[in-house]
Image (cartoon, rainbow over all chains, first blue to last red; front, side):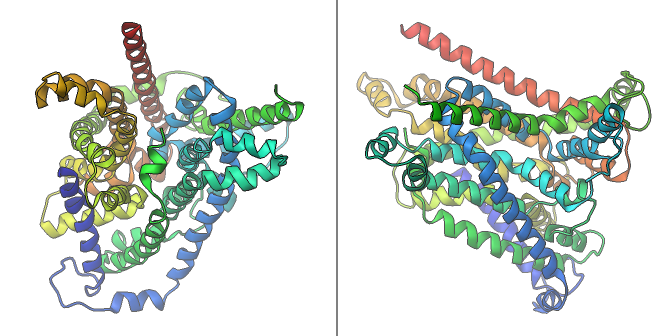
Length: 270
Length: 270
């Protein structure tokens, strides 16, 4: 199985290397030294937890906003748009393949003072507004924007798993629109929705570019702390220890959610 | 018959979805606009339009070198990942074997993993192995993340594949290789083809994995990021536009090709 070999050499081994590095003394560049817990002590006595909280908080907000934005679209793609659904899917897919940086930079050009939005407002209406670029709002816009497809596609998969018969039956039995949504659609679409939540949350926790490009470093996410430790500070073991903590949070969540689903059923519904 | 309530709900969903499309394409439009300015700084409305920066960008040797590196990596990733993922997908969706459900979840893990952390982990791992970093190590890094995605893409096609087709061919006296070449491959072709597209495009646009694993070589997204952080030049929107147009053309071209093939096959069957 070549795929297993690839994952062993390219995924499992690097993660083990990170774990090994996290137990090395400060500022060392090899893993052949006596292990120590010093890096974890440093982390627990520092303010790194603030970055952790920011990352988790931003990811939660992103997931919630995207859930509200994407559900009607997923529903529409399955039941309303008919043959246009394919075209819309294509439109939603294209941005996935353009580098995240480039697209976030587009937001900078849109939001910046004298940029596309404010420049237009100024020249057309003569209003001079202040820019929301480099604020927390901008970061959230950026994250909602970048992770949109990661929520939409699994959710659409989930919504399309709801059989029409179940919905019709509920209506025939006199259920209201809201009851059908709550009692039939939501539970049956749950596997797809949960995978969408998980994917979005995990990717958003690991996000770094949004805070940097559109956020003007207003918020320091945990990934930034990790990067600083690796680059400027040249303290690989500290960065590795921070990564391990992030991996534990993410890994626990992924395993918890994935364990509950039979992937054959989610993917092979046809 | 649709009720009035249903119709107005559907209208709302249409408006909502179109708003999402607009939201998704705001930054792209901004990047294109910014590349068409002739002044050194971006102001909107654009005072002087022109292709000056396009010319400057394409006259530079560095641009071609960046494109060369990015395309080379993407092509290698495409070929290798589709071969690995094809067999991975058969095991994923087709054959029953012990350990399959664990395998299914393991294969998906890298997708659910923050790429920036994965990039760093790979950097540590390459370092522990004493490997020199270059575009070749970047290929490996891309594979770790892209092979699972492509496996998933091809799996969806495999799920809809009726194994009876293969059995019929065996019954008619075809050899194993003939069945593979004449039945399995053609039937799964659309999945393999979209796998190719996904692999190429995801590698083309990837930033977090490239950042840590390319060593002295630079890809387009990396270069753009460096320029964005270091200060604006209209060369950034130009390369950004090129990268976007490349992705759009490939995706639409690929989609058109798939549709053509599907129509041709349907016509033949009728």
